Length: 156
Image (spheres, rainbow, N blue to C red):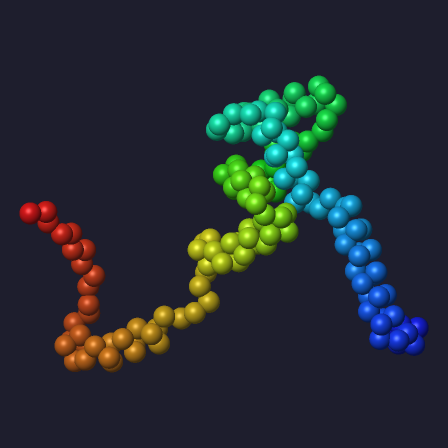
């Protein structure tokens, strides 16, 4: 850092740009975890060349590619990575228009956004809200406990 500060402003900008270019080139040469699975999916889809890409198609494409000494990820790892076959197919479809990083971010956001729906206990107490609703509803509701009724519209 001390040497960097001794450079003029133009030299600092040039050094920073060079460091950024080297970092980008290094990252581009490395294949990320997600990219490895996307590459396997894309390669199997190319070999299968069917309209409805199914798990059996992936497995047969993997066997065919193994005969040609080309390795792709096993189906079990693919499912472990994406969770379900539908999510893997969604990632495959997204790979045509998005980067691996964007796909990973999308799935990560989805996991955090739906976390309360996955059977986890709510960390809030509904008693204060219920009390507020009873006070706001007035004396008619306090006399009896409200019941929920399902109203099904009739067809005329």
